[in-house]
Image: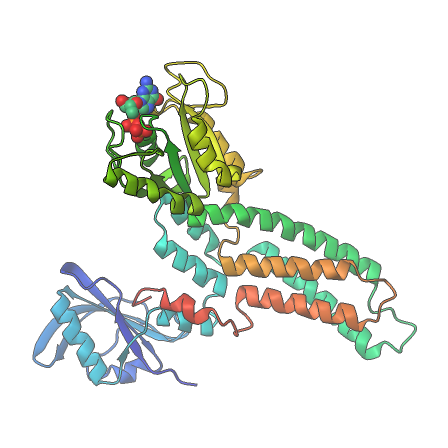
Length: 434
Ligand code: GDP
């Protein structure tokens, strides 16, 4: 079915050296004929574009189908970067039947035309949203096609689907054993082992993608703001010796030791008569709820953590880490840091151990990382486990339908089933022109 031509600015609508407008559709050389003769494929050429009294010398590029981003004809116009000029040009294109693209529509067409798979599209989205260097590297590692382990699993499952279907169709033939249940189960066990490793890798990868939400709590003067700034690598929170200065909750996204963090600096956890400070204290609870890790900062010179704070943190105990700060001043047990001197190595180890376990952050690069992907992988594992529990003597229809289910899950993972209902939400999160 021919797709109607679409256009969009690829560069932001700001005053800038160059503004790029992209057009995609079928037979663009005919559609754009009134405007300009298109250059040779993939060769940049200068063209004078004349419309509605405007006269613009522009660089034009032509990527004929199917060798383009969308798989359709694509033309790029590089105009002078004036936002009004760009608007007028888009209006003109609208007048010759080239409508403005919806967010993500170019990429959606690329997916439809098989130029990209769904895993690529999701990685692209994450690349555009990445807020830290590690997140950029992680999204880049996920670009570039279906990972080998998925391709191999798909091939193996396809093989067994074919065997199982043959067994269902020709099961009467006693001489041929189409479906050797023993061989199937041992193959499924091998596949599932890979799936489990990938599941653990992607659990860690999701921390890289989404960031770890860290709340820093402790009594006034424990060094919370100092630690906050040491982790954030910039002076975001006010550091002061007067107890209770950090009255509101301060939040900052940053990357520390290769880990994307979202840090919350909370008001001193204590009773107060000062109403502003009390407000800050009241706001701590939702943050403790949301946090993935609560760092309870206890000055090393203190003989023990404050019992009142311990009590407040009790409901969140499984995600609380007691960190001894000011270890330059006194000896203590446990995770020992000196926030003021940036000596945070034991804390870094604790983070890595908790969120990455057996993997280094680098070992998680390329792993599945979106909620959709991880849920499908979990379903796939469950499906494979059901196959492993089948009796060798069970009717062949059972493994046949479970294998078929596994096959469908893989197809959904790569987007080859073309029926994913989450697609709309995915593309609407893209920026215009992508
Ligand atoms: P908060 O009230 O918990 O946010 O504490 P601050 O970060 O404002 O720190 C209180 C005081 O402790 C400041 O004078 C800091 O310079 C000092 N401090 C913070 N961390 C350390 C540390 O590791 N060693 C030493 N010696 N002093 C620190």
